[in-house]
Image (cartoon, rainbow, N blue to C red):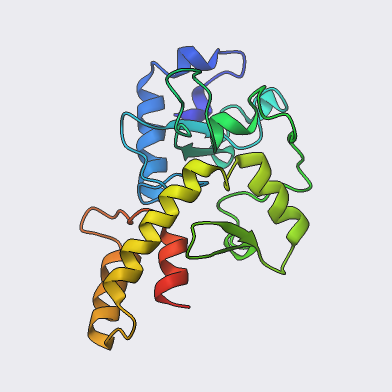
Length: 202
């Protein structure tokens, strides 16, 4: 249905069509229910179809499925309406230090992207040695190390580590891997998949 859309159609008009609903559903299934950037759950009330290359940079990709992904809304604060991370943050006016750079941006569905980052038990995301410059750009541009995400990842890591105990038995480890690293019956993943993988498959 995206191929039938016209580039001069306002995105707001498209958002009210059945094609928008269909596209969102498809992206949700492909991403196993997680935000393409921070791996938070993207429920019906939280999330939007994200243009990876911003619309203002390339209108020709407005309805290009390869340029679309499902992002969370970045924990917009009620008092200021500003996103703290992910899609609504990356091109927001209050993101002063970073702008779109196609040479540094790594697409979420690129198989190399996950190899750019590592996670620690305190909830921080860090660059690996693969391409630190690109990783730092992605972290800053998307707000992936903002205090909101760090706190949420830290709490999540503590839960997993407490469950493992100091000397986890193999059965417990396998059960946790099945729960946190496998698709559930609906085809969804638990939040913070990469962090879970770092803890359960170090």
